[in-house]
Image (cartoon, rainbow, N blue to C red):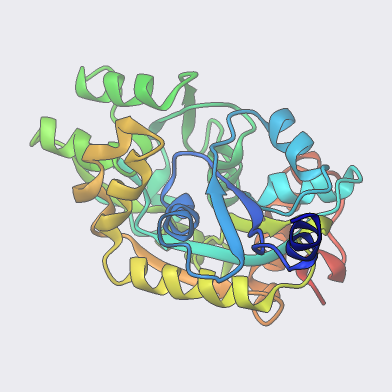
Length: 300
């Protein structure tokens, strides 16, 4: 009996799946990561999605030895890199149609059309504000920012008629339009950005990064690009995936339906992200950590 137990102990046991943590905020760009966790497409790897809520919490997760894939704004990734938290961008997302200026009055097709407008923005110095500053400098001869502290406050002021225009992401933009037929899409930020910067790409503002613990995993990247392509073909479906972790996103489908999502794989399309970060650096260098990332940031 003892010999039998000894021989049994020598037999190989079940292979335990390695776990990769996936993390992101409640935005469309997190949906492909959630899809990986829902479908578990790579044999031998268990994907687990957990939202991040603060930059400091995300920093701690990325600094661990465990493999991590995370969605975040492109400037945040540059700041992490500049401050010694090594991350590598594996993909960037262009989600054209995801941010619009909603309001009353004539539509805008060029940055000059902003002149004389008061525009509700959530926070001074955050990415939407920096993008608007690059599109057209605010001031007495241009447009005026009205900082509200939250996206919801901007939408409420707009619906109450206390302000003429607000910068709103989806699904808030679609929700505002549904509540007040007097509102319209005055401009898509993508269009204004392209005119102002002469760049061909819409802003690749969201990126997917991995930490050193992730290593080189071509099979995971292949799986990510596949689920992204699937969602890009039906962007409204992202709402259901996000609702698993962010219940407030359950009704976001109609707002997401018009998003034109594009997956920019690195390092082949690194220049699009580098150009975007250079434009933000020109407005506020501290917003990306004071310097432009080097080639290693893009896996080059």
